Length: 117
Image (cartoon, rainbow, N blue to C red):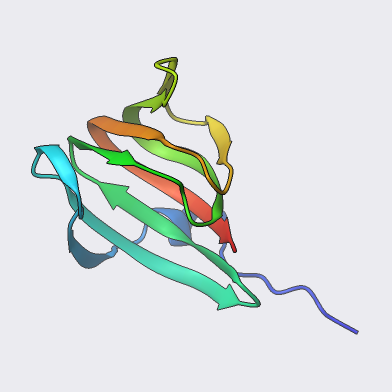
């Protein structure tokens, strides 16, 4: 039998200081810097907080599923077909395994993320 695991309390955990994760690999616009903190990892699932300064990059054939909630900032997410969506505080989205497209961070974004293999 499994028991639930509380991984974060809303206020303190979601706004806490993050670890420096360095430059965003593959960036082709700006010099986006990332930081974050993993709150839970196990059974092919990872939950955490991620933050990135302005910049942009392309993703081709995403290796996992990701669901996020935007906690701060603003970004544009563009699908490979050219359709785009502006993401702002409170937005929730899922990027499926195999998704291709582009992230353009307009204002430093902080997000809660959940990835699954």
